[in-house]
Length: 130
Image 1 (cartoon, rainbow, N blue to C red):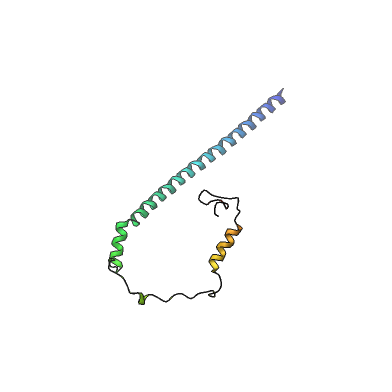
Image 2: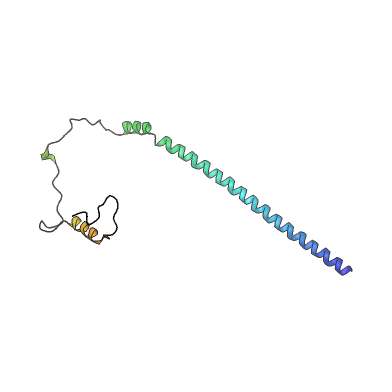
């Protein structure tokens, strides 16, 4: 009979130790979750502060004041124009005059590779284009 009592007492002590361990783990995890919630709240507050600061820095009135103070810009008038002789020279051509336009050739290649069965509402079907 004493052996049974000792086994029951040992089982109770083991069960109590196991329950205590589970309780401590759950308590530590709860504390960790609370710390994470507090950290998230701090980060959100920091983000809100940075957004408010950005809104202040990005204010059109502030930017206009800075531009007027630091840039020597003058208002544009409707009579500002220049003669054609002062235009810059035409940029050089990168293909020979007899060759087809390279960008047009790329577009034609893309059009040819497109599936004729795929048609959107804004593009008529290939039979309707004729």
